[in-house]
Image (cartoon, rainbow, N blue to C red; front, side):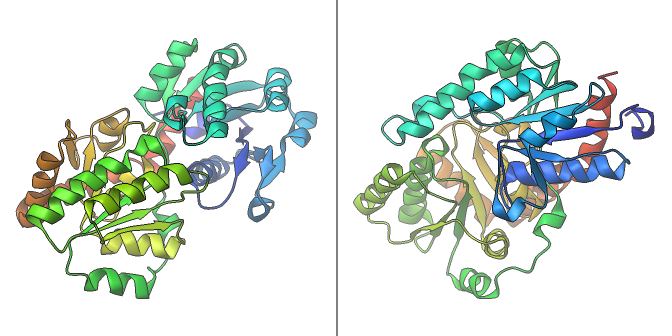
Amino acid sequence: MKSHQNLGLKTVHQFHPVVTHGDAISNHILSLRSILRGWGMRSEIISEYPQPSFEAEAQHFHRYRRRTTSEDVILLHFSMGYSPEVMNWVRHIRGRKILVYHNITPAEYFIGVNGVYREVAWLGRQQLGRLATMVSDGWGDSTYNCLELQAAGIAETRVLPIVIDPGFYNVPPDPELLRRLRAEPGPVVLFVGRVVPNKRLEDVILTFHYLKRYIRPTAQLYFVGSHDQMEPYLDYLGTLVARLGLPDVHFEGHVSKEELVAFYQGADVFLCMSEHEGFGVPLVESMNYGLPVVAYAAAAVPETMGDAGVLVHTKDPAYVAELVGVLLEDEAWRSRIVARQRDRARDFYPESVAGILADALGALR
């Protein structure tokens, strides 16, 4: 690892179209800024649409263009399509431009669900090739993301994983919710993430149905995450739950940080059947809280999990449910999994990612 004192850089800024408190990319951007400022660098957050709660943390991108220099490095976080105005801005700003790719959900997942999201996803993937001509390097949250950058024409790529800062979750859990979860006869199965088709919540429900019918009749399933603008998909999931006769499936929507901590502390297993993840922040959050993870081995999930948790290579509800059942019963196995997961989670702590960031910045010289 290069010493940050020998990087020869004074200014590293970051851009993302929307920054706000509470979402994974904004938390990541804040963590990177803290690391950079801790090294004595100038580091600002730039946005097209800084949210009201974030106005003190970010400046509008028009202001940045007037002050940029050729010595600046700017990290362009990319997780959605940029507006034409931003694309023009990226083309003309000076300095070393790095595309930080968080992946974009393939547009086909949104067909019949949300036409606007489908268009934005399609546009974002089309823009990757154009952005490749405007930037010098590409950094991805995972090797999976870097391969997509290379396919788009960016030759110089590096992995810079998402920062998971335990300080963001250093709040007491919601006491009433935690009490309620722990009072459940259980087990409590949890999934955290937006209610969007690529997450394949229907596969979680089908697995839960088998678990509840044949293994643990008192099981409860909680989905935590926003379903805003995904109502057709939510309606489909509700119909599936009704057809299967599952009264113990709960869609909690967006929750507060205190409630999220309560869910992580009160659940017994985290079950992920997602087909497309560029990283998978809730996987690491679960590992950090000692919540055993069972996850489908798709996209970047195996890389994020490392040798921790339990990866499955099938969506057969019977197989996955039986595996969950064994995990809930075998205390020794569960303890070994939790211990390894905690070790893996530390790979994404600020002090770990800081070393990777220093190497990546040092390679720019």
